[in-house]
Amino acid sequence: MQRFARMVDKIESFLSIWLLGIIVLLIFFSSLLRYIGFPINGADTIAETLFVWLIYIGADQVLRKDRHLGVDFFTQRLPVRIRNFISIVVLLVMLAFLVLVTYFGMSLTLANNGRILGDLPISYSFVAMAIPIGTFLMCLTIIVRILVLIWDLKN
Image (cartoon, rainbow, N blue to C red; front, top):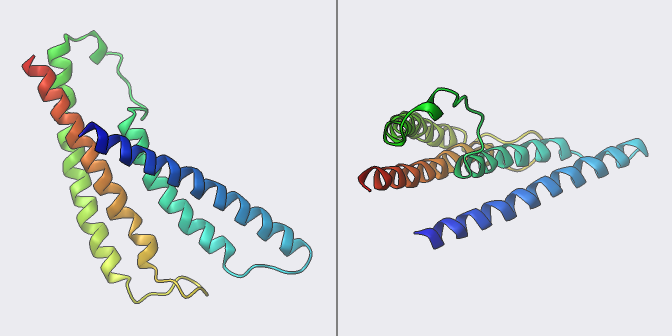
């Protein structure tokens, strides 16, 4: 299980780095070429699409590394068992929400299958697909965290 999690983390890190690099280069060269009179049609649309994917992949990485903002002033003063129990409840609520977002993200992806993205011959479902894939990855991350917390409660 840990090997699979490390592999997913490496893939997400690799994709995040490359997506951000492609976005920066695309916008830079698009601006440069527009300045000299040769604009790249659809460059901003491609950059926005890649940015959506970057956001959802990055959200899972942040969730996995527990780097989301949180106020833990009160919970840090609780005993470890109660803190773990509260964490499990919060993670279950998050999981329920993410399952709903995954479901409706799939519906959005399927509904936009025939829609074209601006002037580009790319389906809008490619953009919408980032939602269910990203939230599904977050669901897997939360399930693993819940299992670890339950294991800690038992020991």
